[in-house]
Image (cartoon, rainbow, N blue to C red; front, side, top):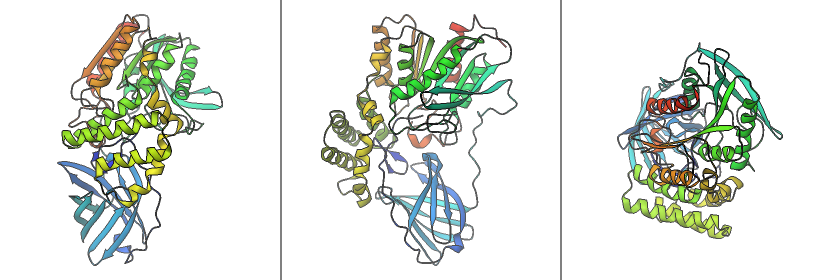
Length: 472
């Protein structure tokens, strides 16, 4: 659902551009056998007035940690020690040496979590924690029909789910296009399933919806290693072709979220079958510009001062400009180090230093290079079909004030006769009603997608295309 995941400086403060890949270290032998704590422990870290869920699993000689609110699962633990009633362990490979130290009292472990020089209280209870409530998840039986659908793009087979109203139709149909990173057909993130929620609402309103597993994810074949946004555009276009052949379809539209909001105009600009486009938190500027502003917004949402946020943004500007211009690997390592220093301070932990090369290699990957240089305006100017563009005012990943005006300007410069652009107050990148808009909130919010956003999308499509459709 999102653009490149930020480096986590502090566990609840996402303030950089991309995740540093750290080499795995050998697991040290604990100073005492861990049979006393063996099993699962669940609880939370209290960070800046917020509660981050934590799940720790210990075997007799090792351990792992999951932080669901940051989409982190099964991270190995290191430096595990158990002396008397005091247990201590670190998250392996993370910057700032994130360390837990707590006292065991019956079925509870309570103490302090430290990272990057800051300390926060934590507590864990033995046993599994309850799954977070996601009240918008639709529950069967559904008042519509579900079908398995597949499409081919060269040697890639894409698998998805088609939902259609009961009745003969024809119906307006939409293809949902996910954001960056491997996404399943529900665009699942942090136990939220936004595409499932959106598809359910649209189908209940009389529309046919296709949502699919990204290539190399779920039941879809193929690899993402050498893929670019053009590859993903061809994947989405394959489903446009599937819908075009159906007699129960009156018009085919595209709804793209985040990176999917850049992919959708690529498809629509070159395919006459596409009759409308909905852009959700879509970029209106090139990837380098977007990432610079993203770093500033994430820093501010994480509590950084304006001055520190600007220093991080400036370091990001130098790094991404250099990456776009084909700078040498040595130069990119130097600039990546400078960016990490802007976030973490001058003295970088050894593990951060060790991860700089892997970070630079991700910058040089085909997808990232295409993303940094690509200009969404070129495809937006070619769109003549109706376009709805939405963004939340608390989106810290695709900042509304930077991207919506650029989207509108490009569409109007192309003389598009039907353009609707709206900022939705208080909504984040996932279109949840948010506090700060920071990434760490996504999993903590019960709401999967604001009903205001869902109703706006539904009404906009129905006003234009439901007249010719047979409603269920």
